[in-house]
Image 1 (cartoon, rainbow, N blue to C red):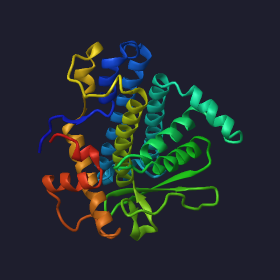
Image 2 (image 1 turned 180 degrees about the vertical axis):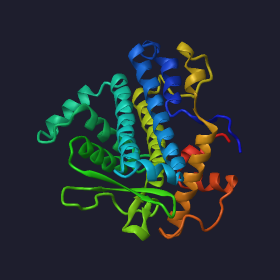
Image 3 (image 1 turned 30 degrees about the horizontal axis):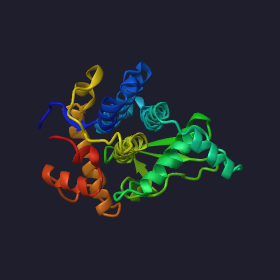
Length: 307
């Protein structure tokens, strides 16, 4: 088992390269640097929360002693919803600092007087249009569901109910509205067929950590496309990066033990989907096959990692 840090490409590095080549004034903005650092930090926190939850669920004694009220599982579950929304919000703040959409927003509002958009909803509108032109489109509707749940948690509109399956040593949860209706769509990447389709917690957030990483990668490619022009093409330069950006921002680093947990979670996601929700243990997936499957399914935290 390799316990050294594992590196994955930073979704922001292409943007940093482009700013270095053509927008030195923007890249040397301390507010922008803060946002870039902050997004990275929050992504690490999300990954470590998911992998920690995956690890502690095998500790039966912990749950017997402290989980009578469900707090051991409820708190990290809600935290992961917050983190996913926070990371996307920071990405939008970065884009908003770099791109001036004022003229386009005004035109849109004149043409659609009843559909006035905020700056963030307009970014979503523009990104969706960009995504629809790409040969390898990513799904972006998933975030709307995650953000909707996050907002309802904040405002007390739903209840996150944790479950611990002691016989399987697995943590699960469900989100219920005020009518006690489950609001998370059934999907056998994470749904527990045997227990009323409650959700395996690490599978659920592991899946959306992969989705978020792909989202960020494509979103920052969209930002580059909005900034670039024939006079300023994006060429993936290998030049010196201002403010020592290259070393800390070319790669993101995940601790070896955490990456092993992430691989374990990803194997479970793949096997559960393959069995249509019946099993996560039908066969082993070695590292080369795992990487190949992840490449095919756009689980890029694994397929893009160097391990």
